[in-house]
Length: 138
Image 1 (cartoon, helix red, strand yellow):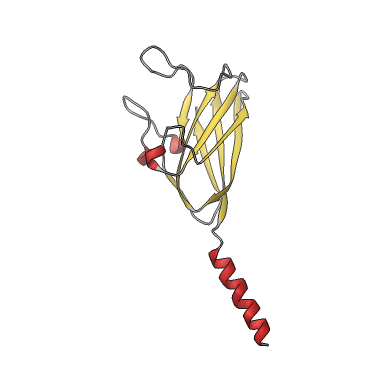
Image 2 (tube, helix red, strand yellow; image 1 turned 30 degrees about the horizontal axis):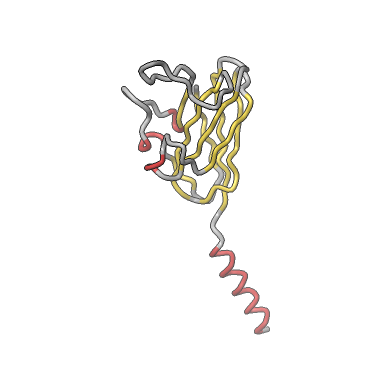
Protein backbone atom coordinates (compact mmCIF):
# COMPACT_ATOMS: atom_id res chain seq x y z
CA UNK A 1 0.00 0.00 0.00
CA UNK A 2 2.84 2.43 0.90
CA UNK A 3 4.52 1.61 -2.38
CA UNK A 4 1.31 2.36 -4.31
CA UNK A 5 0.88 5.73 -2.56
CA UNK A 6 4.54 6.57 -3.23
CA UNK A 7 4.14 5.73 -6.91
CA UNK A 8 1.01 7.91 -7.14
CA UNK A 9 2.84 10.82 -5.47
CA UNK A 10 5.83 10.51 -7.78
CA UNK A 11 3.52 10.45 -10.80
CA UNK A 12 1.64 13.49 -9.53
CA UNK A 13 4.82 15.49 -8.87
CA UNK A 14 6.21 14.55 -12.29
CA UNK A 15 3.01 15.58 -14.07
CA UNK A 16 3.01 18.95 -12.29
CA UNK A 17 6.61 19.67 -13.27
CA UNK A 18 6.11 18.91 -16.96
CA UNK A 19 5.13 22.11 -18.73
CA UNK A 20 2.11 21.94 -21.01
CA UNK A 21 2.97 21.62 -24.69
CA UNK A 22 0.47 22.99 -27.16
CA UNK A 23 0.23 23.65 -30.86
CA UNK A 24 -0.27 26.97 -32.61
CA UNK A 25 -1.87 26.60 -36.04
CA UNK A 26 -1.71 29.47 -38.52
CA UNK A 27 -4.26 29.72 -41.31
CA UNK A 28 -2.92 32.14 -43.91
CA UNK A 29 -5.55 33.38 -46.35
CA UNK A 30 -5.80 35.81 -49.28
CA UNK A 31 -2.61 34.47 -50.88
CA UNK A 32 -2.43 36.00 -54.38
CA UNK A 33 -0.32 33.33 -56.10
CA UNK A 34 1.16 29.86 -55.80
CA UNK A 35 4.66 31.18 -56.45
CA UNK A 36 7.30 30.84 -53.72
CA UNK A 37 6.96 30.15 -50.02
CA UNK A 38 5.11 31.44 -46.97
CA UNK A 39 7.75 32.16 -44.31
CA UNK A 40 6.56 32.18 -40.67
CA UNK A 41 8.12 33.22 -37.36
CA UNK A 42 6.78 32.60 -33.84
CA UNK A 43 8.16 35.02 -31.24
CA UNK A 44 8.12 34.47 -27.47
CA UNK A 45 9.72 37.74 -26.43
CA UNK A 46 8.58 41.30 -27.24
CA UNK A 47 12.21 42.44 -27.49
CA UNK A 48 12.81 39.97 -30.33
CA UNK A 49 9.61 40.67 -32.28
CA UNK A 50 10.32 41.15 -36.00
CA UNK A 51 14.00 40.27 -35.59
CA UNK A 52 15.85 37.12 -36.61
CA UNK A 53 15.70 35.89 -32.98
CA UNK A 54 12.63 33.68 -33.42
CA UNK A 55 11.33 31.13 -30.94
CA UNK A 56 10.27 28.85 -33.81
CA UNK A 57 10.36 29.34 -37.55
CA UNK A 58 8.64 27.59 -40.39
CA UNK A 59 7.83 27.67 -44.06
CA UNK A 60 5.24 26.17 -46.34
CA UNK A 61 4.79 26.20 -50.10
CA UNK A 62 2.54 29.03 -51.20
CA UNK A 63 -0.81 28.14 -52.70
CA UNK A 64 -3.25 30.66 -54.12
CA UNK A 65 -6.01 31.03 -51.54
CA UNK A 66 -5.27 29.52 -48.12
CA UNK A 67 -2.57 27.39 -46.44
CA UNK A 68 -2.18 26.17 -42.87
CA UNK A 69 1.02 25.70 -40.88
CA UNK A 70 1.34 24.33 -37.32
CA UNK A 71 3.99 25.09 -34.71
CA UNK A 72 4.17 22.06 -32.38
CA UNK A 73 5.44 21.74 -28.81
CA UNK A 74 4.70 25.33 -27.80
CA UNK A 75 4.79 25.87 -24.01
CA UNK A 76 2.22 28.05 -22.26
CA UNK A 77 3.08 31.72 -22.69
CA UNK A 78 2.54 34.87 -24.70
CA UNK A 79 3.54 34.87 -28.38
CA UNK A 80 3.26 36.80 -31.64
CA UNK A 81 3.59 35.69 -35.26
CA UNK A 82 4.94 37.42 -38.32
CA UNK A 83 4.88 36.02 -41.81
CA UNK A 84 5.48 37.00 -45.41
CA UNK A 85 4.98 35.61 -48.89
CA UNK A 86 8.48 35.03 -50.28
CA UNK A 87 7.30 35.00 -53.89
CA UNK A 88 10.77 34.82 -55.43
CA UNK A 89 12.05 32.22 -52.89
CA UNK A 90 15.16 34.20 -52.01
CA UNK A 91 14.65 33.72 -48.25
CA UNK A 92 14.12 37.38 -47.40
CA UNK A 93 11.39 40.00 -47.36
CA UNK A 94 12.20 42.20 -50.33
CA UNK A 95 11.81 45.95 -49.85
CA UNK A 96 12.05 49.03 -52.03
CA UNK A 97 14.73 51.73 -51.69
CA UNK A 98 13.09 53.30 -48.62
CA UNK A 99 12.48 49.98 -46.85
CA UNK A 100 8.80 49.43 -47.69
CA UNK A 101 8.10 45.71 -48.29
CA UNK A 102 7.44 44.70 -51.89
CA UNK A 103 6.18 41.25 -50.80
CA UNK A 104 2.97 40.68 -48.84
CA UNK A 105 3.41 40.37 -45.07
CA UNK A 106 1.15 40.07 -42.00
CA UNK A 107 1.12 39.47 -38.24
CA UNK A 108 -0.98 37.59 -35.70
CA UNK A 109 -4.35 39.10 -34.81
CA UNK A 110 -4.08 40.73 -38.27
CA UNK A 111 -2.19 43.53 -36.50
CA UNK A 112 -1.34 46.42 -38.78
CA UNK A 113 1.29 49.08 -38.24
CA UNK A 114 0.61 52.72 -38.87
CA UNK A 115 3.62 54.30 -40.57
CA UNK A 116 5.71 51.25 -39.71
CA UNK A 117 5.56 47.59 -38.76
CA UNK A 118 2.92 46.11 -36.42
CA UNK A 119 3.53 46.35 -32.68
CA UNK A 120 3.95 43.42 -30.27
CA UNK A 121 1.04 44.73 -28.18
CA UNK A 122 -1.30 44.38 -31.16
CA UNK A 123 0.02 41.03 -32.38
CA UNK A 124 0.44 39.15 -29.08
CA UNK A 125 -1.79 36.26 -28.02
CA UNK A 126 -1.78 33.78 -25.17
CA UNK A 127 -1.23 30.04 -25.24
CA UNK A 128 -2.50 28.49 -22.03
CA UNK A 129 -3.04 24.72 -21.87
CA UNK A 130 -4.85 24.59 -25.19
CA UNK A 131 -4.13 24.54 -28.89
CA UNK A 132 -4.50 27.88 -30.63
CA UNK A 133 -5.59 28.84 -34.17
CA UNK A 134 -4.51 32.18 -35.61
CA UNK A 135 -6.27 33.24 -38.83
CA UNK A 136 -4.10 35.75 -40.66
CA UNK A 137 -4.87 37.52 -43.94
CA UNK A 138 -2.09 38.58 -46.29
